[in-house]
Length: 115
Image: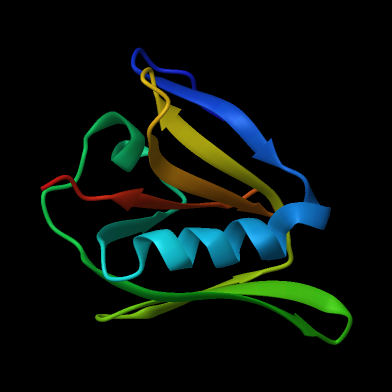
């Protein structure tokens, strides 16, 4: 969890709200360019200049364990056993990224590409 100047993890999404949060996220941002990074937080410090259109985000259950699937036009990412979801907002309250931590505390960051 990071708290840089201009960025604030001010919204931890409760697991009971994940489905509705993710459905709303896709409804609002489908087609918007995103960059996805795993096990690194450079996207939080350096906004991306390239990405791929967001197509879908699904929360599924496999063997009684949830997993999250993020699909862009370029690639599909699977996060096994998500544990925490953070909505990362700018100092103006605009959603700029989503960080997902799995049970091993590995991070997946999906950041919106400006422009």
